[in-house]
Each structure stands twice: as structure tokens, then as C-alpha cells.
Image 1 (cartoon, helix red, strand yellow):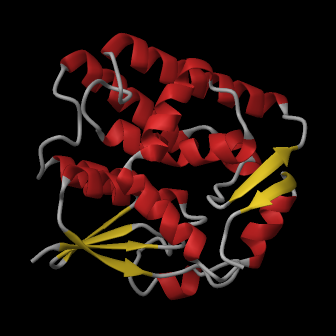
Image 2 (cartoon, one colour):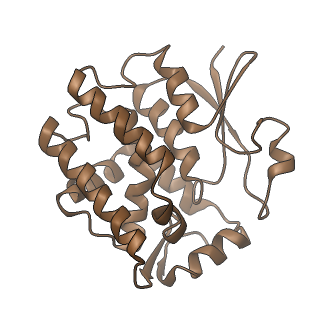
Length: 227
């Protein structure tokens, strides 16, 4: 029986993208269940399938796994390729993944994921400047140390999956990630990411709080979503 992965809006849900792109890229079969954001808080409705009232959630028979990192760790126990094989690359990936999972609050708050738009951002707060500089450092270190084209070497791993939402943020807000732009271009161009993006652009609904959050971050200069 295949896994079931519960995710939300392709345009907004950065946390949903992580396990989705990981499983797609590694060829791990799963059925998709879509639970869209329909209002500012879907907590009560999402409690029906998620102990945290949030997505993503992975269902494996009678087992429920929640949180993008929890799902990644669960899959790593059952499938090869989630983490890099090389010990140094694995250590780098484990550190950078947990750093992304627990940090970068300014990047999340000031540059929310919205796949289909381009934004001229407001002047960056110092905290956001630091977050962008740190992302740039991780990208450049990973590519330089392990040779690319992925952040931990030749193979796509959970490290790339956890920073995949950042790729869309970099493009949406025109953030400068230095030589890390090579990874941004590479990951966004991949057919799996293009599949996600196509679905995001085709979504016809708009969730008010996500849209208001976007407008508070800057001026929209282009909108490629279905009107």
C-alpha cells in the first residue's frame, strides 16, 4: 500500500513542498491528498488528519507522520538516497537541514512563498539581510565543497528538498544569493519542480491572509497565476 502525502496550496505551502519534491525526486511512490488553505486558520479542520492541525502529513497504513522533518527522517529509515552517502556531505546536509527547519524566521516572515508572483521588496530589515547572507553562504559552500549540481554533490537529497522553497523566494523577491544562483536555476528548471509550479499557477483561489502578507512585504510587479 503506497504512502499518502497530505499537502496544501502549491502557491503558498512551502512546508508541503519539501516532502513532496523529495519523494518525487527519489521515486518514492505515494498518493496525493490535497487539503487547501481556505481561510486564515484551518487548524480545526486539519486536526481531523494532523495532530498539529498543520500540513504536511504522511500516512503509512495506520501510522501518521507529521512535520516536514519528521517525514524526512521517517523516509530515511526506509529508503536510500534521502541523505548523502558521503560522510562529510551527510554531516553538512544534516546541519543545514536542521538549521533551515529551526531558523530563518526573518526570511519566512518577510518573504513568504508565493510561487506565481514577482515582488519589489521593501528595504530589508537587518535580520533578513543576515538570513539571506547565511543562505548564500550555505549554497556557495555546498556547491564548492561537493561539486554540485546539487547542494551536497551529484545527487538530489533532502538538503535540496528543504531549500527548494527558498528557490522560489529568491526568484519572487529578487534576492542575491551570489554563486548560489546556479543551484536556484538548476532546481527550478527541474521537471519535478516545474510540475509543482504549473499546479501553483493553475490554482484559481486566493487565500486572503496569504495575499495580505505578501502585499505587506512589497509591491507586486508581475503575477503569472491564473486570474
